[in-house]
Amino acid sequence: MATIKKRLGDLLVDSLLISEEQLQEALREQSKTKQKLGDLLITHGYITEQQLIEVLEFQLGIPHVSLFKYQIDPSITQIIPESMARRYQAIPLQKDGGRLMVAMADPLDYFAIEELRMSTGFRIEPAISSRDELQRAIARHYGLQDSMNQMMVDLSNSDEISETEITDEDSPVVRLVNQMIQQAVQLRASDIHVDPSELHVSIRYRIDGVLRTERTVPKQMQGFITARLKIMAKLNIAERRLPQDGRIKMKVDFKAVDIRVSSLPTIHGEKIVLRVLDLSTGVKAIDQLGFNPHNMQLFRDMIDRPYGILLITGPTGSGKTTTLYSGLQHLNREDTNIITIEDPVEYQLEGINQVHVTPNIGLTFAAGLRSILRQDPNVVMVGEIRDSETAEIAIRASLTGHLVLSTLHTNDSVSTITRFRDMGVEPYLISSSLVGVVAQRLVRRICTECKVEYNVTDQERIFLKNRFVEVDKLYRGKGCGSCSNTGYRGRVAIHEVLNVDDEMRELITNGASVQQLRDSASKQGMIGLMDDGLEKVTRGITTLQEVLRETVAH
Image (tube, rainbow, N blue to C red):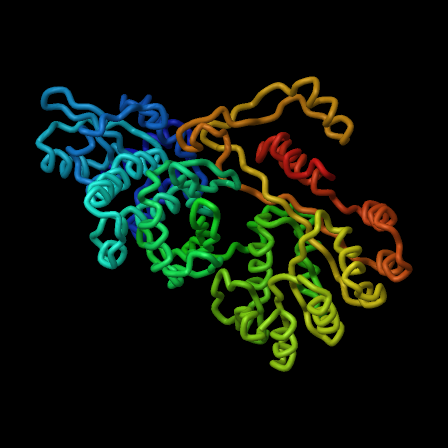
């Protein structure tokens, strides 16, 4: 195996994609982690998956197959068992006599090829495909369809939902739900929607902030899927008239996954939404949040303050909690007592005391915050400021020597000040306590596998010139299997960081208008959401269309 891996490394060095030093560093790490060399090089950012595919295709003559467009005969997939397909990331494409063409993530894995040959009896001819495409193809052609077919057979025999069918790990409905969640994790979905309609049920995934229908299932399956999800989330299976919230903890592909479950009664039955949190990814360091250097320095200065209140603002799903957790991780030291109150606790952080809000027993944000202040904290994190009582307690806590971090739903950083005023907080309290506000949005990243350069259009040139940006070339994704033909893969944050200086404090105390506050912030050098977004556009991280979609109101 070592010679195989060295051979791949030599190919990449000869193609000038990596240096000899990078290869040796990856080989040293490989000897410790036992990861595949190609995966290590991609993880470190030395090469992209597309570059690896091109080297294998052109240097070794291994054909590249785009599974996104490939029609696979369902009967062919039965040749390779599902367990083997998942273990070796391989799926059969076509057979010709004694020859079987198999798409693989690593076509140089001769051990896997030999295993497949012995299992199937065919001579294996490997083709290469991206790992993401393979995971999608395996999820689509194995498992889910088999479980659905078996469920339809069971339904034809009985319409009643028995306890065994929703609790037995080998039953079709249990397998179907597990595979649905597994596929969502593999596709990096943040949410799974089980949407009932009059005639069928749609299974939709939110990937990179955009919802798309993955499949539809017959209406008869709705009760089985809903019952299974409610059992997993420890919800009342008999209660179908009231909304319920629960939680599922499970392992998917050996990774810990935490799932928040919400059920909502609709006219066509219960709609279930699952928020998927991949715990294996951990909390990001603050230098991985996408701040530009100027905003990064401001943010560091703010969270290193001994007291005051720092707010992260933006709409739902804009990454506020991720930024908060990163800030807490930065402050998490042995000599610092950090206590949070959240609804719900999303990530459990070692060394931090986290409290879950329970309104039905009286543990609200305001009540919890009062108790926290008697626990001698240095840093307090309030998941969200929703009312004037919580705002007032948080601000007074920040004035008595605590650093308070929290979130608020406002459109931009300056609007936070007027939101506090609307809540009835006195201007002098706001000016005395507020150290800064970070407004943020999430925009989709251009897929690195299919990123291409293009000439700026006349319309784009005029718009950019009005924003004092002059470029001739921009970037976009042309669409490939890795990004499901969308041209985007992953997301990055754009920020607007308001630093409350002495001039701003005076304006707040005097009840200045939003426009006056905004003018003052601009004068001190605040970079707006759109301007930060445009900077990422010129660097080829995202597209102008994405930035406009998220910031058009600004």
